[in-house]
Length: 403
Ligand SMILES: Nc1ncnc2c1ncn2[C@@H]1O[C@H](COP(=O)(O)OP(=O)(O)O)[C@@H](O)[C@H]1O
Ligand SMILES: [Mg+2]
Image (cartoon, rainbow, N blue to C red; front, side, top):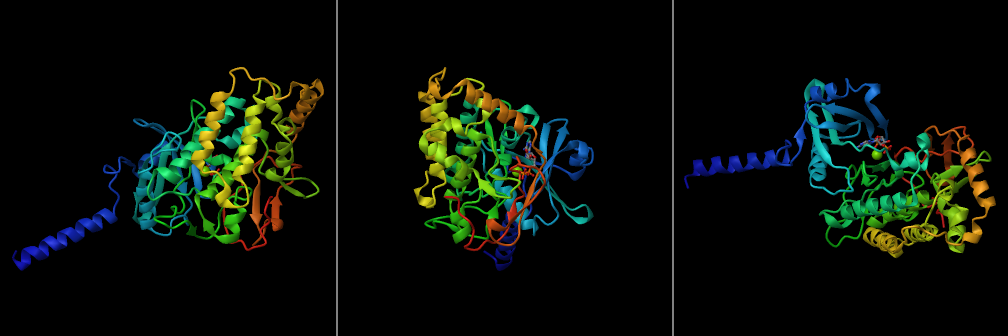
């Protein structure tokens, strides 16, 4: 080959390599490239009226499109992406993840210059988030079967992130507001991949700064900075307990004592007295107490201190599904003797007391280091919101570990 032709070919191949690493090719990734104007039109210029909620990442808007219908538009805070490459890598990673129990990425908007924008566009999940149900927002509640099905679906979604893709993804922010509820009350896990990928090859963990939400953070991860899939299993264990009890992960009382749901629920689950901690709404209907107890026991196994002794996410959903398949269509209470009219009466009182609480969003700020030094910024008697800001922080060894 003549040296000139060779040089031209070499240049061309470098250019195409640059292209692949550089600009996003929406068609190739099976995604749609939205212009900023399209998104502005769909959200009435990112109006308050279209705002669904906001989190640590930024705001989420409901967008209405002529062709695509309703979509969720995630507009990050200005400081979210440090570089364009970071955004592009994230889009590439998310485009490869497809599962019924994971919120799917539909497209993105990337613009440079004065109108610079980096926005992710997701499928819109219609029935709110698990947090809405745990807090009973708008009188919302779930049947025992819906709770188990949501736990199974969410566990399947997370298991797919851990075991079904390469490189695997450790979610790092499993919490009720990241488990969205679809039209058929199926679970859809959101916000995966917005953080670091999981370990590759024979690595057992990824070392990183602690990132996550207080109440759901694995103390073992906080102490060691070793991120493994079991970090997500811990957070999921907390959610299993919340599905049973409909309580926040961390509750503070007027006397400013902070109690974690694990410490609060453990004695009753270990005694087999699930009715002591169960969501009062479940006592007013037919509920499979046996199944709820099993879910509680599994929850406690997910939060054991040593990460490797916890079940994997696949084991979690398989165990829940096996128990659900064995459950009778019309459940009988675990011990009908325990369900006296008195306990039902107490449940009704619990429900009416709950409605007196201020359900406003609470922000827990971590003043530097340990959980002991949490400052709970609110004035309600008992905060029902687990919607704590996702905080990036470094925590040293004195982080208190719920046992
Ligand atoms: N794809 C989606 N479809 C519908 N609602 C969504 C979607 N993604 C997020 N949301 C809602 O938007 C709100 C804000 O989400 P987010 O920014 O992820 O913060 P967080 O998860 O910390 O609450 C959440 O309450 C969630 O219910
Ligand atoms: Mg979220």
